[in-house]
Image (cartoon, rainbow, N blue to C red; front, side, top):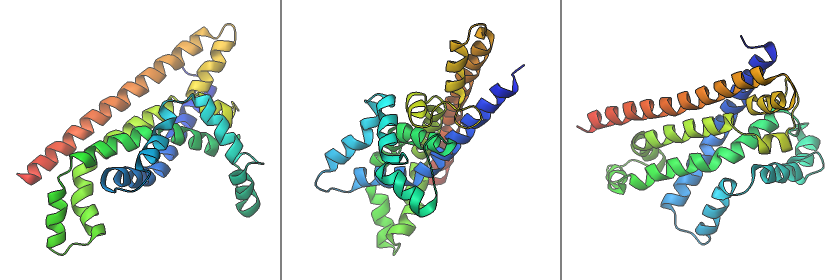
Length: 231
């Protein structure tokens, strides 16, 4: 059986991952569409910046967030003085760290779907009088939905496993920012807690595998439904 602290870490991880994905999804859609369909000066630079979290250490990402969103940082001080919002050392800050780390995975999956979308379908809708927004929501979005779904689930799984950026920016506070990976790390550091660490390790692996399986099953169902609709 899991202890109350272990259940608390699991519930906090799910909450952090849920909000990280939910808040970053609209921006990921916009950025993926911008990179896939719009030509503008500096697009390669924007693409590189978007994918930077994949190649730099998560601890460095956490430190950058600390500099920007800390109480004395330019964004953090502004949020605190104008809205009374503090992100550092909070579960909202943990969600921000997880969102930044997982954002490139979501953008990449969505962009691949957009690249595979036939522009002729959108042009046909335009010739029939549909506006850009209506075309996107009725033609483009349903057709790229498998990629959106895959990106969401991959990002969710990545958020559940985020450690470096979270502990640097949000710290390891029980009940507030101690997510599943941080709880596992804490148990590993305590002598005699090997059993609890093993349980959390197994739970982490199971949740990640279930998320990936769910992504594949849902994507297949969406593709099947879309293929049936086109037929």
